[in-house]
Length: 261
Ligand SMILES: C[S@@+](CC[C@H](N)C(=O)[O-])C[C@H]1O[C@@H](n2cnc3c(N)ncnc32)[C@H](O)[C@@H]1O
Image (cartoon, rainbow, N blue to C red):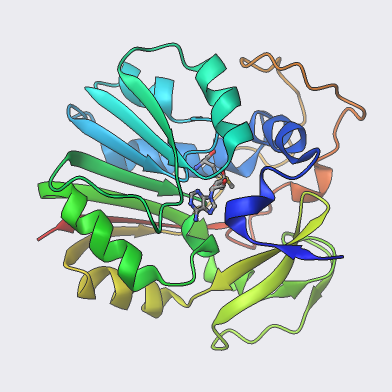
């Protein structure tokens, strides 16, 4: 099976449906771990313009606009993700742009906040991208990134990243690793915690906070609530994502907030 890159994977046949079902699942790790942490890092003073890199279908758009963001700009390379996002996010203050975040022409000092959730581990040259992001931020602008926790990304996996099938881990062996995701093989770039720190600080940011994502809610909770986002994607199995259920022993995310200096 051919391994895909992040910028083309989400337009492959059947991936959008699987991803939307996963991402809108009530116990999705993004919902139960990543979201509360990012909201706590945003605090109550969200007022300015937001750039969401690798925005997918804009899962953050309505939330951020409702919390006070003046505008939302989502950039993604996946036409299908953006098409779904445009149908979902009706706000006039939101715009979606189809582009590779490595190649997009970033406006100088255009944004107060840059968000990059679950996308930077698809990027080979982080230094170059961070320099562009920094230039696109206003003075004292904030960058919040969320990536696969290095303890997870250090594994090359045969089945899935969260529980079974781990093989050949070497934490300090950084670079491209092939991993299973949504039943396909994808290439992700593993970086150690200190490498993220180096890249962000050398790009001209001050790291304000690092979080690894402790699951705070009751692990045994199994009740499924109706999804607030209604999709047309059929649901073949009541819980097809059971294998992605998060545990309290392996942190799935590394979340970093940094300020432009
Ligand atoms: C796991 S999804 C995360 C989506 C969104 N940030 C969220 O939290 O729901 C990763 C997204 O990154 C996008 N992506 C990956 N590489 C990219 C690149 N080089 N340029 C633009 N988008 C990219 C994919 O198309 C996909 O929509």
